[in-house]
Length: 290
Image (tube, rainbow, N blue to C red; front, top):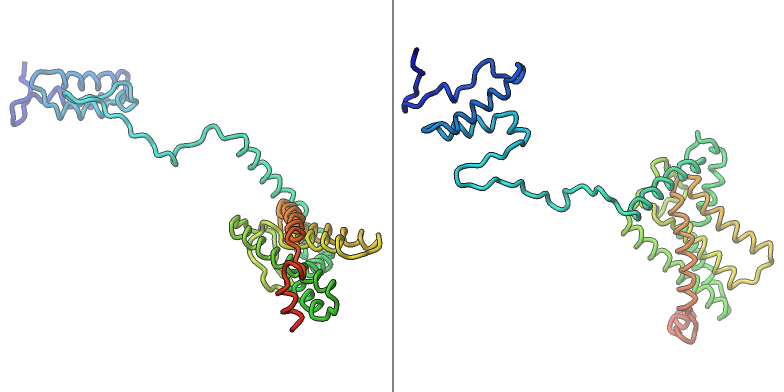
């Protein structure tokens, strides 16, 4: 019987070398491979490096059936993932509701954007919608208020116009602040081609036209004596102006809805901080001198 070959250190090589027929493709190949690995690791005088190498290459060890432990060492545990890399398998009900609301908002906004382009279903109504858009622009309202304030010759008229100017400036400030914080992009089907494009920004939430329409309409209804048809016309103007923002593809539905709410609340702030010659005499005196 021939003696087994030995390496330079005099250790047997047959127990550590894998057989060419021990691949997993043959029947029982995996068990034979592991038997050789265990034999190599348990044989007296066997090379521990060879034993660890064969045990690590075992198919059963790769499946994690048994841990590989060194002499006198504890099994290595996998390090836990960072908190930000873990998958949230149990999302909260609030998160699901917000995602559903956002999906419905985007779908409804795209369906109502019938005037977003010339080739849209209501593309012929687009010029009228753009005219409504210009009627609610903040720069035009500021210039018109300043002109009427310069032409006014009564203290009551100046008081109303001064507060209207204050409300318009407050509206521009709050809308710009919220847009800078939220940074929601305008709808993908938006085509910004206004005639009067000054101070048009790229953010969508909330709609500045909607806030201004709600603010101005409530201001007019509370401080101007108008007949019933004119009051109805003011309300319709505010509503159609907000609707035109969605039809033109400028804003989503939630942008306009929150804009109406914000404009309504802005008038409450203006009414609470109402400027008059009694609490702000410096403003009226300076304006009177000019």
